[in-house]
Image 1 (cartoon, rainbow, N blue to C red):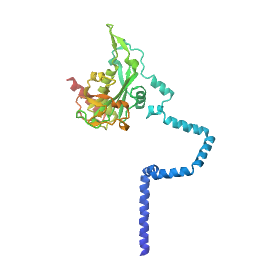
Image 2 (cartoon, rainbow, N blue to C red):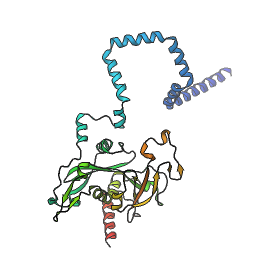
Image 3 (spheres, rainbow, N blue to C red):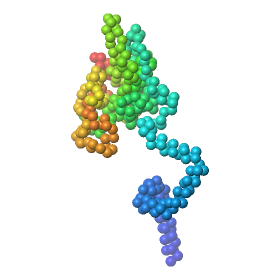
Length: 328
């Protein structure tokens, strides 16, 4: 009888050990992290270092003398990791010489010949590579940072030459805007056009000088196709009912939004944001431009109650239906 009880106890102990082992392997990362950051662990390491301080210093000096090249690489890696240049290009690696040359020279257009046709016919949009477009935005855009979450960038081209970039993404908001849920909104997040193109002008037949309205033309063309392209890239996301964007009142007047039939739908930014108060320091406002007051613009797609489509044929069919509805 006693042997049977001992055997059962041993079986139960083995089962408990097995359960503990399985639990440990499932949660190994969090356990090790907790051990590493625990106060007891820190205190133990501190005491151990004080006891062996001189020995560790001598060992480090000896390794430094024997391995000067490895030490140099360690220092270089540490300095580069914490450098301003690394933080500037984050989350991407620092571009090499050839990449940087391409980024700096991107978008230059020397002349615009009006005899080749109107700008509206010569300006085209091409879906851009996400990394390349973000590198251009980080380097050239006044905010010097790209967006996260779902993104859809376009190259703005004149005569097939890229001169700028326009990028759409999911908005980082949690409240409805004019009764539209955040997941049914698309944000016009970034727009940059090379200054050499923005400063170009041409003369018409009567000798009058005109500046190139590249920004408003590109925005208008992108609005016409972004809904289709977004569905093609993210077919499982909810349908898009409107495009939202913000214009910094310190830098812009919102002219290109108004020319593209966007409507003013409110203000945001500054010390207050929505219905709540924003803190003035810490991680809640990581960028200075967050403090600026911004005008919120909204463009609602006509017939936005069309069903979500999941393949290209249905998309094209619905686009044709939308165009007929707008025509009549």
